[in-house]
Structure formats: C-alpha cells, structure tokens
Length: 225
Length: 334
Image (tube, rainbow over the protein chains, first blue to last red):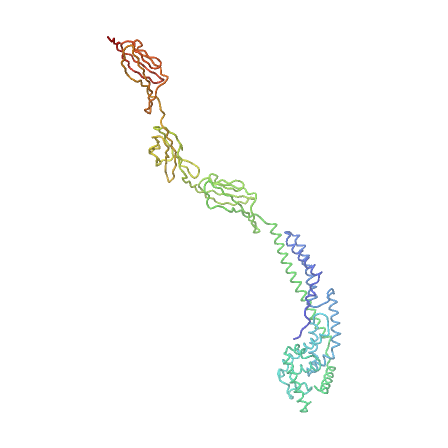
C-alpha cells in the first residue's frame, strides 16, 4: 500500500479565509434578497471571492500541500528542483534495490523511472526523505505487475534454473520472497514497513523472509551459489 | 544473509545499475506533466462548480427580477362566502388577489357590488346583508379585475315565541264585562292576532270567560285568565271588586198611621241600599201633603190637626219616602 502524505485539512481553516468565506456568503445572500438587477453585483462579487480567496487557495493548500501564499507557478518550479535533488540523492540506493529485485537491468531502469514518474505525479506537500519509501513501494508494485504479465510462471513459484539464467542467487526465490529480502536486507526497511508497503500481513512477511533465507541457505549448501 | 553473499549481490547490482542508469529527467518530465494536469484539473473542477453554482443563482435572480417586473393581477376571488345566508343576517366577505408570479395576497381597494340589492346588499367594506330569499351575485373588483361569487339567501325562519293578552291586568266590578285580546309574538319580533285560542278561567266563581275572550266578573276576587294557542299560553289577571252600593230608596216607618186630631207620631226615615241594607236617613226634608190635616216638623214628628188624610214625604237627594197619615176626629170622652 503506497501512501502519500495525508491531506492537511487544518491548513484550510485560516482566520482570514474564514472571514472572507463569511463575507462572500453574506454578499451572495444579500444579492439574492435584492429583487432587481442590482442584486447580481454582490452575488458575482461573492462568487469571485469564494472562488479566488477561499476555494482555490484551499485546494492549493489541502490537495497539493503547497505552502500557503506562494504562487502556483513558483511552487511547481520549486517542486521540480526539490524532486530532482532528492531523486539524485536516492538514486544509488534505489537503483541498487531495483537491480536486486529485478534481474534485467534495462527492465529495472524502466520500472524505476516509472516509479519516479508516478512519485513526482502523486507526492503531496513538501518533498521529504519519506518519498524514498513511497518510490520503493511504487517500484515494487510495478515489478509485481511486470512479473505477472511478462513472466506469469513466476507469480508464486521460484524460477527454475533452466528457464532463467542464474544471474543472481535471488533468482531462485519467488518474486514476493525476493522483494521482502531486498527491502529488508538492502533497503533496510523494518518488517512492519515491508508489510505496510506490500499490503501483506506481518506474519506473512516473516514467513516469506524465513523461507527465502532457508532457500538461499540450501542453494549455498548445494553449491549453486 | 551472509555478508559475503550480500556484498556480491550488491556489487553485481551496482554494476548493472551503472550500466543501465535510470533517467531521472525523463521520469520527472513525465511525472510533473501528470502532476500539473492534476493541479489544473482540480482547479478546473472547483472553478467549474463555482461558476455553475453562480450561473444557477444568477439565472434564479434574473428570473426573480423578471417576475417582479411582469407581476400582474390575474384574478380576484371572493373568499369566506357562506353557502346560504338567512334573510336578515350579515356576513363579512373578503377578496384575494392572485398574481402572475403565483402569489396570493388579500385584495385592497376593492369595489363591492351586489347584482341584486333586493336579495342581498353589500357595502364598501364587503359586509353583505341578506335581505330576502333569492340569489344574488356579489362582485369584487380591483384594478379592473373582477371576481364574483353567488350568495343564496333563504327565508327567515319565524317561530312563535309567546302569546300576550291585552290587557294583561284588569279590574272589574262584579257583573261587569271586558274583552281580552290575544296576540301571538314571533321570533322576529312581530306580532299577530291569535285566532284559535282556547280560553280558560282559573277561577270561574270570580270571573268567567267565553270562547271569544269576553270576561264576566262574577264576584270579588282574583282570577287568572289563560289563553293557549300553538303550544304557547298567555295570561291576564282579572281582579273583581264588589259592585258600588247606592241608595235605592227611602222608607218611612210607619208607612201608614191613624191618629186622632191633636195626637202626634214620630216617623222614622230609612234609606235602602242596592245591596239590600238599610240605614237611618239623616238630613231628610219632611213635607206634609196637607198641613191642614197633619203637620210634620224637621224631625219627622207628625201632628194630626184635623180629620182627613195627609201624605207625609221625606226627601233626600234622589229618593223620597212617604207615609200616609189618617186623622180621625178627636174623640170627646164623656
């Protein structure tokens, strides 16, 4: 389950905005009571105030988590810079995990790019280090989807040695086991975080991890590693 | 996981990552384009909703303005019209004005007219008065728009409320008569002679009454005369007084006497009354019919003078009594 930061509804309720809201409603109500064409003036003014001073700023703050009072264009420009800096800083770590999870480097790169793109499209509010977990989550989802559609035989069963070249010891694991092992051993996520990220029960994550380690131990003992 | 294996896996993965690096710029381009679209879509949705609401309100306001401009009185109706009105009764009518905007308000400045004033009249305030049985159309007009309503007037229902005898009280002397008149009274205040009355005397020994209402006083006392018709009864009180006592005659005693000349006799005068009683008469004027035979003084003392017959009269106003005096010669006693 990939979760972006929650909406901060509280940021919508600012004193100035509440005053403007009351004033806009009063203007609309007053215009409604005036039984002639002059009633249209306060109604239009009230609607404009309601839109420009209340609703759009509220969307700006709540839905996208932008800093209050900053223009949209500047916010978007700053966001691109922030995302670029954070992604660059996390590139090595994420590319490592991607190539550990995915045997094919080209596929790993494509899936990681897709994760970055979705993250930059979905992330709400200021860019924080927590974006790493979200990017990993999106990558894992993409990988699982890719595995299901491109290599259906790998959905649950470990890859057979004949079908896939043994590029990595992890190739002997099922995709789920492989994801759990990489996220735990290399991404250094806790089991609880992995359970949340994969949408699995914690017991299942533990079981997958134990099974994966047992498989790796057997492979090592048999000399295939 | 063994550190050695972990290191091998890590170095292999890093090598693959270096050989196939991800393109952050491309990802950012795609992601930020989607993000901008989301922002635009959110703003567009909110703006569209507000604009639509504003348009709806504006249209409503324009419609309201139009209604105010074009509102017209379309009809006038008369409310609270009684189905039937009894002649003599009144009722307050009200008129309602119906306007083109669907509103209804009490009509003001209404001109009220009755189509038949002999059946029902209506004043300027809408107060209708039923006059007589029939049907009348009442019109209410405001600003050239007229509403009508039909009022049916039914006859007034008159009931007998009582019977009155005239006179209600009478005083009669025994033997006198009087005639009582009976009149019926009605719920509308009118009266009429009663024509089929049953007459009854409460005490026939005091007063009697016949079938025509003629009362005859019998003897002193009080009697109630009742007259009944159509379930109602009227009474009259008849007080009977005794008849007046009058002097009916004057009687002298003795009515005849024989005297010898020189003798005297005192006559007594008695008045007789109509009730049969008698009383000594006083103040009587005595007269002798032949003073040579017998004389009479003012006290009724008769003195025989010489032989013959004389009539002595005693008179009071209206009555006269007589006594015959025969005078015989004086006998000489030898």
